[in-house]
Image (tube, rainbow, N blue to C red; front, side):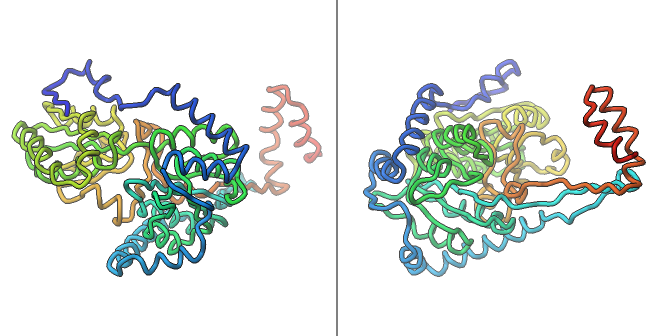
Length: 424
């Protein structure tokens, strides 16, 4: 835990850095994995399951029987919770559908855009120590609403070679086409090239560790699109004197428990809240089942005392957090000041866990300062926007001279002639 009291702005550049692995080390391993998967397909994935997840898997595809079985393996209360979350996520994402608007830019010239779903998408679901079935909802629900024809899912198996039943249940509920037992960079490689079992896809979605993020970026070399660079989780909490230290500590730890490479940042203008939040973090972390992960994440995390909320927001915009919590009294006043953040939580009762699970917003968000230039996943992430235009004879007559002059000025006379020949 790193504590900073009134740090000067010339130190901020160092404070906003994330803990990262050596890029050379990562990229070399990613290249090897992609070569192996492209060459040996399912066989490579089975070997990687053994190597990285200590899992024995005879086949990669999860059978229909296993998916059906999963429904009986989870409690009715959890099923109901998943269903309510799915409903809220559906409501929020369905509201993002847009009507076609035809615009007459010049008399006789009509232009518009229409959405077409990305035909095949692959969603990556982290498993291992924390099987994120909630991410299935966040990705499969908007994919279905968008009309994607094929939605496949890859997730690492447990040591017995099985997939968590809640992941299987959520996947079936949300219309996932096929489910495969493979994780890490090798899953991304499989969705890129295709294997005997796994079809190649047009776009890959989902968060993961630094290896998964690097693999998604590498996949783009082969013409596969990705949602965004979404790596280890992070949260930045800004608190004033009205903040509740216990709430702030709980929010910080909710991200820290994701993994040792997660990062949390706490900024406050109030010395008492500063001291009490640090104390509350120390007390609460001891009671967490995942306190080892949380403790390691806290080692790379910062607690910062500043003079004003304006300064806190300036720091936050430089950091560009995945999740931003404004645990402040008059948060409406400061909303316009938020420039860079994946998702924002307002007031003392808007815990980040609400967005992670069931409020309706998407929790697949840009990390590692990519909130400066990326948005979180939305319905738009699963569609392409195609432009259309129709020019009547009158329309071309009205616009023709402009096109001819511009084409000639650029020295592109065939472009000019395509207009001239029609005007004659």
